[in-house]
Image (cartoon, rainbow, N blue to C red; front, side, top):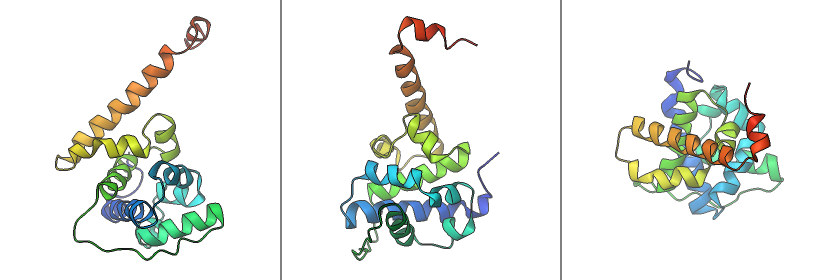
Length: 163
């Protein structure tokens, strides 16, 4: 079951790509910092649920400004630059939106399980591949992160993980 109707998916992916391109390349914010802010915002929960106001009715720049203002009280005033080329940051936001839709997971959970913005950006080498390659790679990032966490538990705590 997907997070929301596929009819909205392209808009959601483009908005999220535009949002990350804007905050990183125009506003010079750290991608992981903004992703953290995004993941804890009420707008993120509306985006995840497929609220058309946020996944289709707002541009990425408008989303970024709304999120940043709501969470920090500050206003992002930099004008967006427009380019015919898509940046790596755009692709990472675009891919994260797809993964969230496809897996029907919350962004906060994806981040907590190891799929941070920087890890997504590191997968840019897949930008020309079919999106299913990104999904597989993102799944691997999450799986590796979970295995890493389990290996660092003490023996007593490892035993407590059994049902």
